[in-house]
View (cartoon, rainbow, N blue to C red):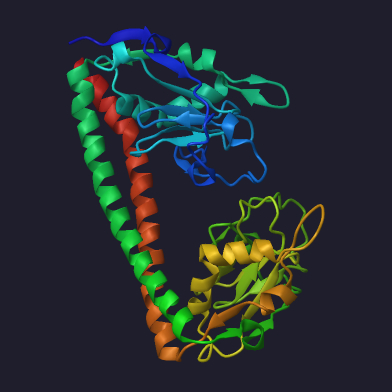
Length: 378
């Protein structure tokens, strides 16, 4: 069986169905990241008119046509969920034409999009000055070497089996999170809550001797983890930077334009980090009275995100200051109970990392599967 050379536009059609009847709400809004996944949006959508948002049904694709400042990658995703989601009207939504579903498999096309070669192709062919775009007409002009349908299906079946395994692992992950949440809710019902301020202390140790360099600089993500900084560190003086010791916390006081979340993290590693002096660094005065991982569990809850946003103050930008942090109230049980709950949570966090690694491995194998399908046809 020979490969079929054609343009992608022969097999796909544009979709522009909007959420006119508001069947889908804020919880259904998704963005598209440069890892080619649909994700809960990080944008502030308060006051946004959701009737203008586009519906992305299962089996449909969606992409952000802006390609500049995107890590040299193209943000395109495939809705492999079992329910529709909605996305901003700025995105482009499309699907395989009904009369082409036995010529081009959607999952094969998604694997095709997941290759680094396709990212490079898109970036090279994007147009614009201050902002570069890759539009609907551009994606329609992509030239494909298309394997026969049975060959596509053979390699898609391999891909789908890997995805099914990863999703099964992910479901077990959410079950573990429910156990943590159940313990916490039980404590909230049975125990009085205490303000955490009396158990905490600010840490303002500075990197005055610059014993820690650029490789120790960290930022804090809205996913509540320390990450390598994305800031331009050229000629930056690291002496004023705060030192974050193991078991210290750090958080960003600014909560506006932050995906309705507060960026706070616990240094649960054996390494020492440094961060900008605009952050707040603190620790538990007595870890045997308030166990740091137990406190981090509370910071990781969606309820805490809502609390921090509600108690943030400001005009142009809103902040959740140290004084407000000290007013947070949580149940503080016996240290053995804290450690037991924290241990379950740490298992959840570790398995969550493994789940992300599984997703990355599936993405990395897509180029191999595409190559295999092309060679299988020759």
